[in-house]
Structure formats: C-alpha cells, structure tokens
Image (cartoon, rainbow, N blue to C red; front, side, top):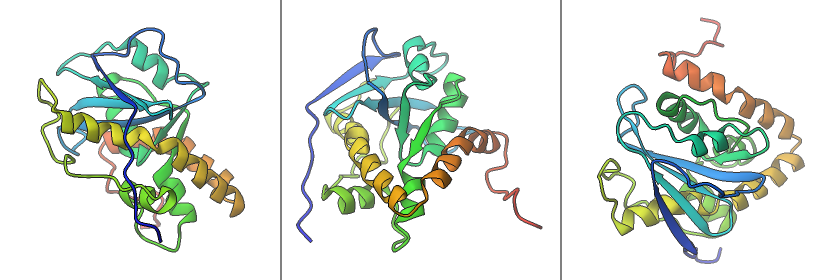
Length: 213
C-alpha cells in the first residue's frame, strides 16, 4: 500500500454565528461539529464545519446561549440537500439540542462503512480516509478548547479536515453499498437517525429498545 498523503483545504472561511447569505453548497454538503465534550446533556455546540467538496471549508463559530443562525438552519433542514456526516448520530443530536432543528436528509459514512467494510472493525474517520483515499488525517487537535473566543490556526485546520474529504468517501462507500446490495438498508438506517437522536437526547442512549429483555 502506498504511503498515505496529506490533503489541504483551498481555503478556510470562518463565520461568527451563522453562514452568510448566498452560499450554495449544491445537492450535498459535508457537515461536522465540534463541541465542549461528548455529553449531549452537558456540552454545547461550538463549531459547525461545512464543505461542498470543492476544497473550501466554511466554519461557523457558535456563541454560548441562543444562536438564531437562520441560514445554517435552513441548509440543515433543506430537503434538497443531503447532509454528509461521519457518525451522524451524535451530530444530528447535538444540532437538534442546540439549534432546535431536525437535520435531514442524511448520509452517514460511518454507518455505510460498518455495512460494507465488514472485513475490519476500524470505522473511525481517520481509518476510513486512509484506506479509501490514501489520505492521512491529523487528530492532534481532537481534544482542545473549542469554546475559546479565538480559535487557533491549528484548530481551524483540524476542523476543516474533517469535512474536506467526506464527499469522496461518500462516493466510494455508495459504490460499495450498491455492489453489496445494501444501499436500501443503509438508506433506512439514515432515515432512522433523527429518531435515534431523539432517543439519545431523551435518555435512552444506553438502552437497546429492540432487545428482547
């Protein structure tokens, strides 16, 4: 296997509180979030990253408290734009808790990976990106203060990297889902994500409601 390469964004656009008017992401947008932590009940949304897959990454820095963000909310709920996430379960839940929106439609590359990359148990974004695209992601800023008033250049670069390649990963996994005749199953899982997020937010995150016992 060839040595993994690194990928750099063409540009990183930082916005405060909302997307500006007039940005067109086309029919699909890669989305990720950064939070103070991973507790949906305790930790708030700090940054939302978005990219059309063109190398340009838009980062929306969210303040504590109320965030009207009408342009961002309109995009996240636009039925004509597919939102591509990696581990959408968390992102969809945190966006609903903090912005009050139900994100749809969704394509989750982590769910897709688990349905078709059954030869491995490594489904993190770093592993999927390395295998499918030959690109190495840095995770050095994964644990940092995303609620800071001013984000560092390294934080901005890290946040952008998480959405930079999701379109290409989606395309590769979509082809594998079709090949393995699992696309319909994947789409059913994607459609269930808003309900899964509601279960997590309502305290059912550790309970398998489908289990017999």
